[in-house]
Image 1 (cartoon, helix red, strand yellow):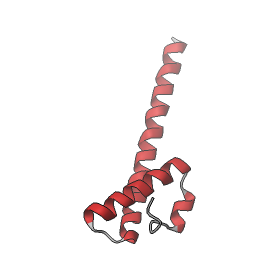
Image 2 (spheres, helix red, strand yellow):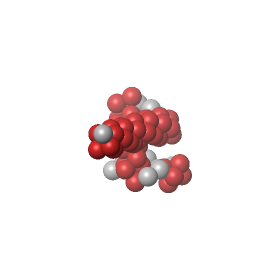
Image 3 (tube, one colour):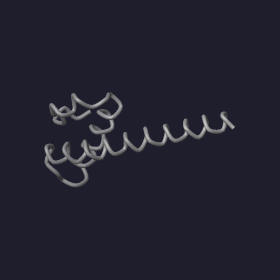
Image 4 (cartoon, one colour):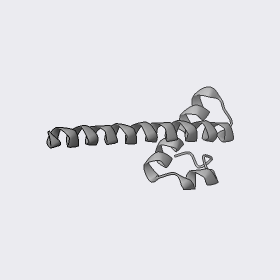
Length: 71
């Protein structure tokens, strides 16, 4: 892992989301030639969106399962 990728904002993310944000930030720094600060900012937003979509998908699956069991 790149030790240059650090931010206090990362501490407020869940471990999985933090790991994803760091991975995305590293990719952004390497491919888009962004500064680490810009890369972290962008990666945190992308990781949060990914986490929300992941949770929403799991919630919908659970709700469908409960509906099927209820019928």
